[in-house]
Length: 461
Ligand code: HAM
Image (cartoon, rainbow, N blue to C red; front, side, top):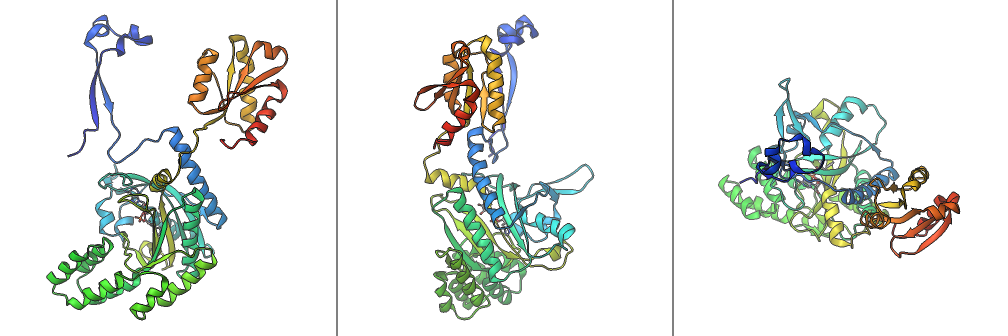
């Protein structure tokens, strides 16, 4: 059952209030009321108020800066694409969840469920001649028709990166290192990095199971760690039990990189050992090997990795990625790439679970004229503060001083700049520290500089 997304409200007070009073016939004003429809947002989507957006943008900016420090450049691709871009190789699970519709020209369009396929399409169409490796990153919203719950939404936000050009251990290490540094840059402390290699399980399953659909189901069940269902699927398809034993042995290979030695030589052996060595040089030495990682998307062919924030509940995976080739599907030469996407919404939830919410400071200064004749000075002062790059606002409601100070405090202004007649007569202003309540008289010509100095010393900013 879906919750209704619209509500009909009878609001009797609306027509009789304020400046709309004259617009409505008396009968309406005095009782019958208007039928107003309150429109709810679609299920699985969210609205973000300014305070939350400030936190999200700060985390996003820290991750963008990290991408730039690794030499990655930003790209933007369309929010909707021809649906075949995703049906080509994203895998059944994602395709089932896609928002697909026909546009007015009869084309089948999908809202992007992820951004990797779009970036590779862009690369094939316009950047294939660029020197390799090509390092690209993106930030954007994605859409999946999932069952909404905390950390799982129908519209969610990703920051991702794709390194196009190779799939060697140094490429994989560079991408994993970027992923870890992005998360560290947001301030997130507790997260676990698990690294595997899809090639090992994929080649075993695809070699032993001729039926592609059964092989796909088995891989998906391994991804969900539902081994009872794996056993049942193999049994009903008449596949010998020895395969189940091999699958559970590989999928159970978890721990330090030495675990590899216990499962015999595989195509991933040398690659993963070298990758773990390079990661150590990058200062990342607490990753776990996990050969059971399959990933929900079908395009991976080599190293795969996932990062979990253990403080989150069921939806604890904050990042997923790996190496793949997609370019040949979109008409280009086959080129190996490695990439990842971070679920920004989950990172924000993980940060919230880990730390005290930062102080709500949204303005550096709120300018308060004490009376009407002071307004013209207040506008000139707020303008000067803004020109200095400070976050400044001014009374627009013609409120009293006390109401203005109350408002300044409620919106999280760090300082109030009080523009009073007596002070202005002495070419001075009052700076009020909104946390301590302390007031200082400063020369008006230097008020902006004084405020700048006070803010520099301030840790709450
Ligand atoms: P993905 O694992 O499907 O990979 O998504 C990456 C991350 O997006 C997940 O780890 C999760 O944090 C977040 N996420 C996914 N679905 C939802 C949802 N419904 N609500 C909230 N967050 C969600 C990809 O998308 C690949 N394109 C990653 C990649 C890039 N592989 C190579 N390059």
